[in-house]
Length: 279
Ligand code: C2E
Ligand code: MG
Ligand code: MG
Ligand code: MG
Image 1 (tube, rainbow, N blue to C red):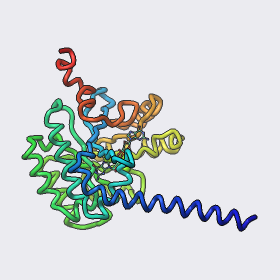
Image 2 (image 1 turned 90 degrees about the vertical axis):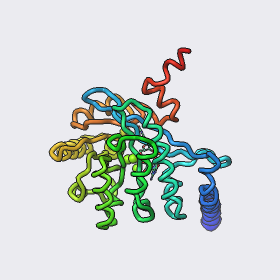
Image 3 (image 1 turned 90 degrees about the horizontal axis):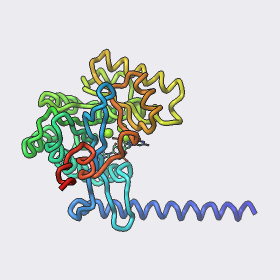
Image 4 (image 1 turned 120 degrees about the horizontal axis):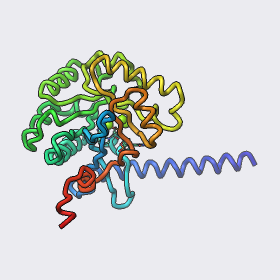
């Protein structure tokens, strides 16, 4: 009996693994063509400043609608893009789309774009950002770049120099997913970030115990002392928003305010295109 069960379990895993391998291969093969085929789209998620209740920024989040697999998560295909050497092209495409879109938004709304560590290794990020800003006409101060601690883990003087050059241009630099992975307060000393984004694990229902709130409060206090803002990610309920306010976070982002939206919907959310609607 035990033997039979073992076999069944093995078959099950084998099949699941086979599916995963096939899926991985499909993603690798199809991703190269996804841009050209128009399967990729940048969505935008608004960020709210708690003190004013105003939308002060939107994060660009990449979406891929695969013709057979359906919606594929960026958490799944960004690592593939890094692996097959496609991230620089993909990242530049997102940056261009996002800056072009934002150039048209109210000037009080910035756009935040995620940068992968591989983009620092395989492309001249400073040059690319400069070119895109010039081409789209977006003022540098309205662009924010989000990096995770893994960018700093490379501990390369070139990366730090690139970040300083970007900041020198006027671009904001945010530390994303703070509090997860290997991130520690020491990363805040390696580079003068403009903003810290507190990972959603501290905000979510599971994470929202007293200890998580204490961590958020201490991160916010540290950030305030450094003169930088804190955005809490993944805020889904009014109660979570109030807890983040109590913990002195300056901004929030999450489904409570809005899910990531296609550009047209985002514009309507920002109160643009109203005359077109009325007509
Ligand atoms: P991230 O930069 O930390 O983005 C925040 C993630 O949280 C997004 O997932 C967003 O959709 C999700 N989120 C927002 N509000 C809520 C909420 O209230 N509850 C919950 N549970 N989740 C929420 P998404 O869009 O699936 O992106 C996942 C990750 O993929 C991003 O994490 C980012 O690291 C990466 N990514 C997305 N777009 C790009 C891109 O253009 N370039 C690069 N390099 N990475 C990207
Ligand atoms: Mg981000
Ligand atoms: Mg994040
Ligand atoms: Mg993340």
